Length: 393
Ligand code: NIG
Ligand code: FE
Image 1 (cartoon, rainbow, N blue to C red):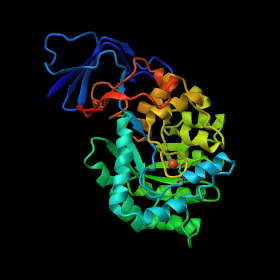
Image 2: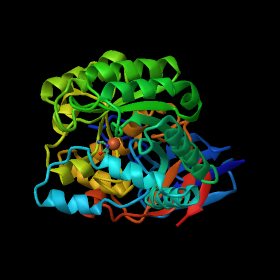
Image 3: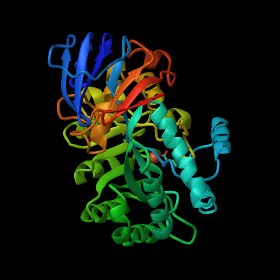
């Protein structure tokens, strides 16, 4: 069935580059949608022959649905005490992940599923239409399979597109060494691969170093998974270069990356996924977003909502914080839509509004994209379409 969405305000289809005008149309404009897919985007009003079914968003700013390419949303327990300790000066080492692993193990399936659904609901309510969710708070094969299944079950009734990532290499459980845990992660792949789209590794010199990360990622690729790496977050380990060498879809965090790394990424097909929320909270350095954009790298923004370093799955907040760490407003919106879609290998489907793309569309309670910087995390969808189907908030 054909449907038209019309507006008289600003439409940011994200068809242009991040440093340009994003293809912006100052209204009036019209988007024609058939069977959940955009067939035409054009300036001007309705014409004879346009569909009778029309939704008008008035003067609202309209964009593609936001894409969150990095979250860890399935967990039990509460580590807010760690945020307070870090604000007093304690360093983040990733050690607290094992607290969440124990709390998650002790939490029944229905409670974990409800918690995850609540977080996915908050993501949708803040304009996200596609999201990546990692396992990683299970670590053993059985516990990781449990979490990947729960992600699938929580997502099934929702209109949200959910990509799953296997992160068995997130921490080293008691009684294991980095090498034995890496081997266990690899050995689980025949059971795990059909439950995930991507594989990820928390690559740090004293955790899973570059050599172990390489083995894990190559094994994941052999099982058909896309590659992602938590790279150069706490220490500059060579993880970013490994990601480029292996043709990873994305290297994430990058707080310790340099301008040379930015040029390396720009010459590659690997996306730089920047997570301003935890970067600001951890106070361990900021990713070189200006160097990344200036070098021409493909940059994505993500929330990194997780159990230990940053909790809120809000992409409007990631956009606002992205501007605070050096993105232009246009770059931040592009990175939260088109860049994030590229990070997930979904650039042909979501993240921009052109013919053939999914009709994942958000109309916001503001008239200009600059409001995302002026009111970080506070802008809200007034209407949202998931593959052309409306969901009003
Ligand atoms: O992306 N850096 C590693 N993993 C998460 C944090 C996990 C945790 O501390 O629970 C992150 O920030
Ligand atoms: Fe993470």
